[in-house]
Image (cartoon, rainbow, N blue to C red; front, top):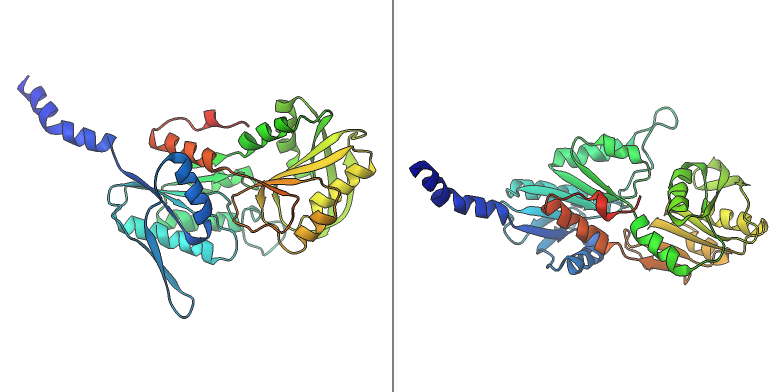
Length: 328
């Protein structure tokens, strides 16, 4: 009995401390806007950190408050330039050396994900290398969205929470009230994604078959399915130079489609992307804010995923299931 009373009196403060473990959200420089939106959605403040820049371009991030024993979440998309990835790695290392309890990397856009296999001899598997770098730096968990290839989760030996933008895009598509909705994939690789949307929305599905002459250039495209009189929504995980999407939109209109829109999780928008979109028959292209951009086309519509990541962070902290929050 005395032992039991001793445990209650002396161990209760320890249990209370564990239950109330502090958590903090920090951001690298390029993802500060989405990090602030996540903090606002969660109802907390963004942590204080600074980055010292040297004259040769080298930089050193620093946490300006104690993170000892805290669950911390570092928000940073790893799109080019490589400094974005390097800054995240340095922040992870700094957090580990500052005795953070758990280090969670929140990577809305996981760069180098297109390098998920050897497509030809003597090339790297970049996505696996990034996974190794993050793990070696000391990260305990990764939260990311719509990986270009689902198998990248297997490149990690730590938990990876893979979120899906369908949670925000499906309500958006429903809000359009399109009378003859048809979901389309701009290539064969995205057919599973398009099929998921089609099943949930109880719509028809069509798929484009494309042949690339070289990277970022579509040689020819064929349509599998009927779009006559349909309101088509093209679904893809990213838009880079927009060659595939705009070509698919042209094929849809030539095949009798009533209208064509596109939804893409990650708006990379490189090279001639905006010019192609403006000249294309696309009515609009909806993207999330995983990649910070000042968009140069009125056809681009931004849908925030801040609430999605905020609820995921809460689930992680409360040891709750994340899958119940998302449509897939």
